Length: 104
Length: 104
DNA sequence: TCACCTTTTAACTTATTAGTTATATATCTA
DNA sequence: TAGATATATAACTAATAAGTTAAAAGGTGA
Image 1 (cartoon, helix red, strand yellow):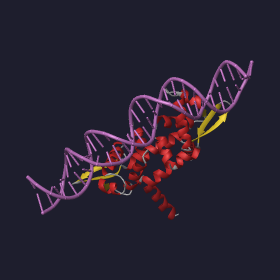
Image 2 (cartoon, chains in turn red, purple, green, cyan; image 1 turned 135 degrees about the horizontal axis):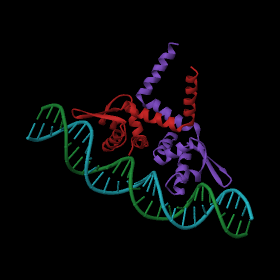
Image 3 (cartoon, protein in one colour; image 1 turned 135 degrees about the vertical axis):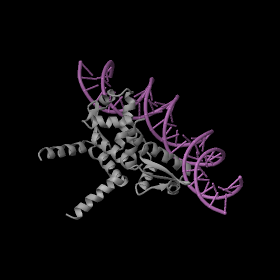
Image 4 (spheres, chains in turn brown, blue, green, yellow; image 1 turned 120 degrees about the vertical axis):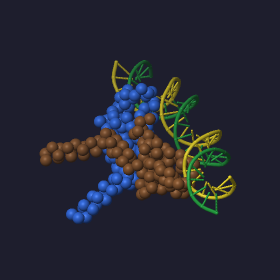
């Protein structure tokens, strides 16, 4: 599966988008993430591994804990590219800017 | 299901993202969209209805045809809001702009 | 009305996903 | 080393998704 495919699949889950929102405020251990959900710890562990395999988050063992954090560029990059390719208004804006720059 | 939930679910399919890309270049009938895929026409019809129910595209009957087109603002809007909420770099950029504007 | 064309809906199958509990692995500390 | 804590993996179940073909619905025009 291609990288954008994995990203969009990862974003399809509300739980995973919530995890991203938490991690966007700073790294957390798997356990702390799991506490915030009304769901078993293994379930959250699986969600984390899906996010990681989409390269949206990183993972680092710290002693007996495992810390996760946002992979800063991949999400914004993938979505920005997609918006630019697929949204007519954003293409229009881009064209406007091009026009402005051409007349600079 | 909330509107952003529907949007992200709709985007989870490669086929549906391809349909959006086609429609972003201009409206097409259901049949013309279906021709571009190696898949039955009813399958495409279902994909179109999922995109429509996420408010990503509009639908209009024209005689015996049904024309579909991009719903210009919903996709960009939803994704931009999400990026802004969830991507640290975009928050950083936003904060920079705020700082710039404050000093204007 | 009838034949034809376009699209949607229905019924079904198969594959995938999201959750569960139980178990294994890794690390810390007494 | 043993026991406790943190996390991941395995095995399983139930719900959902994506495709198929067949049939229905909407619309055209002789």
